[in-house]
Length: 212
Image: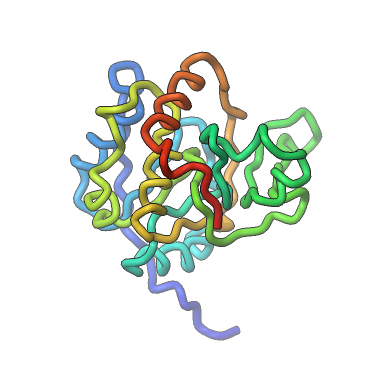
């Protein structure tokens, strides 16, 4: 067995932001401002990373490239005029534009099930937008984008689609990477989500739909 390409342990600092006194836009901006590292990873409180440091080799190398925007574990290569990647096409075609893999709790003996996109393939690569369950970026990227848009949005929806779409419009490349994790929630598409979607569509009405 040859020597590992992994350069050695990295120092990670965990910063916890109270979600009862901050929404996700302000919270993530405050967290980024309180840290000094070049690489930032934004994650929900209800996830478990199921990988060791080797799984982060390629994503971390990508983040060193100035052309890289955000990296996550799920995303899509298109957005429709409604600010979504579903709802306007047959399910099979919608799935063909999705990328990534996420595990969820299940009642089977192993305690989890994996959802993969598209279909059961689990493809990875460049996308237009990235889902926010887990987001990584270089600090220079976050700074150039002005952080998460807490002026337009409030609450806990569309922080991820907004910032990754802005990165895409800047000419940066967003990616979905094979970083396995388990997420305790499947999301909540409630009235608050719908209000955020409408704000997003109003903000980017002249740039939707979009695809690569």
